[in-house]
Image (cartoon, rainbow, N blue to C red; front, side, top):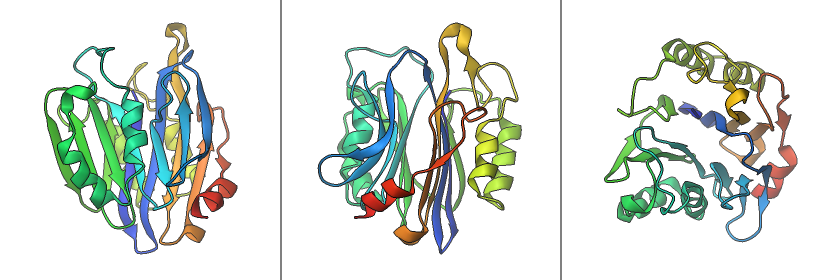
Length: 243
């Protein structure tokens, strides 16, 4: 179960903070974040099976992240949800993307939650595979998982409270990274998932602090389970993204 926690409007100098874990089959190949070719410039990891991504940041300071939505088995004939993120990252702003997505065909993708934000606004679109729902997100903490927004009971209330406390205070990668490494709960309700016997688990983690300027923006990445993998500051990639 992927986790995407975003604090919107933390302060005037820190419009957005994101902490996210990707949970996926261990055999599914992926590469860590890099600067993608083309325009606009995009910083994102990439899934090698379908060539898309699950999160990224573009040169306009637009962040996009996706989680699956529980409730229905995936239809292999539908387009990759990673391609939806890649397409979204071509937008010049969160507001422009929000307007563009109004015309999305919900039958084109398996169910998902799509979060997108920049320095000015934050939004969410989710789909059950049959209908689209779009929301504007106000200041504060928003935690998105496969079971958000009526898709099922999420057993991580205590972890969400700890996330809220951390986002309200210490937003260092060490603090947020320790929350992403949390093992409380059962096999799949933990934030950091270890289901190795089933070939599944947390594959990577991100802590992003999107500052009011690029000089104040930081991207920390763990290419592996955050409980055993150190977060590395990707400052050179952020500088290249900013141009």
